Amino acid sequence: LKFVCVSNDGVDDHMIWLIGLKNIFARQLPNMPKEYIVRLVMDRNHKSVMVIRRNLVVGGITYRPYGSQKFGEIAFCAITADEQVKGYGTRLMNHLKQHARDVDGLTHFLTYADNNAVGYFVKQGFTKEIYLEKERWQGYIKDYDGGILMECKMDPKLPYTD
Ligand code: ACO
Image 1 (cartoon, helix red, strand yellow):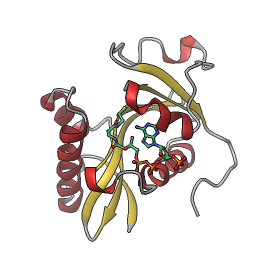
Image 2 (cartoon, helix red, strand yellow):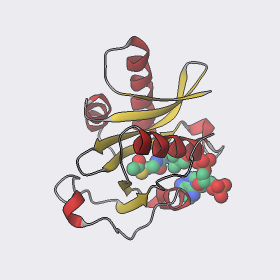
Image 3 (cartoon, helix red, strand yellow):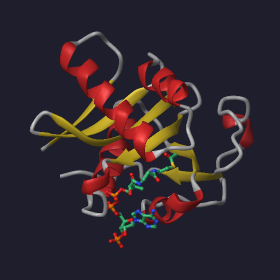
Image 4 (cartoon, protein in one colour):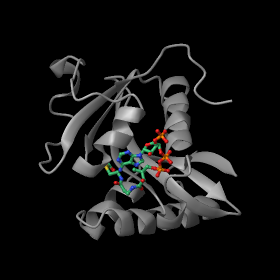
């Protein structure tokens, strides 16, 4: 089992994993247009943190780091159907936080959570209160109805993974 963070860089393995992740998102997020999922997963401004087991994608999170604003926007998050509620979603989020803080230099995440995923995000430390100053994110993330804007502030020092 491994956790990787990749973007569309033309490396064979990375492309195969990104396509696998795109297929998981398409199935797990049926309200999202498939073309929109493909576009963001393959967009070079986005990165994807994935769980890989026996060279197959179990799930992942696609996000866009805004380096100058020091926050990231989570676009999609899903674990494949038969592997949900086994702890992968939590471990994935911890790897995302570690990478975003230590590699991208981010302090916060924002996401539009689906109603049925709010419980998962709350368990990952997200709140419905947005403490991040509006000037830092307004105009960067697109408004999207059908979801609830949630925020997570990363601890500056805590080791999120072992
Ligand atoms: N609602 C409430 N609690 C949840 C949910 C949920 N939908 N999913 C998981 N949890 C809880 C678990 O019970 C667990 O609680 P515990 O620590 O007290 O035992 C905790 O959250 C973490 O569970 P994991 O096993 O780590 O979560 P999992 O591996 O299933 O991943 C995820 C969670 C990503 C939400 C997964 O269930 C999934 O893919 N769901 C379908 C797609 C989806 O809804 N994605 C999010 C959409 S919003 C967005 O993409 C921005």
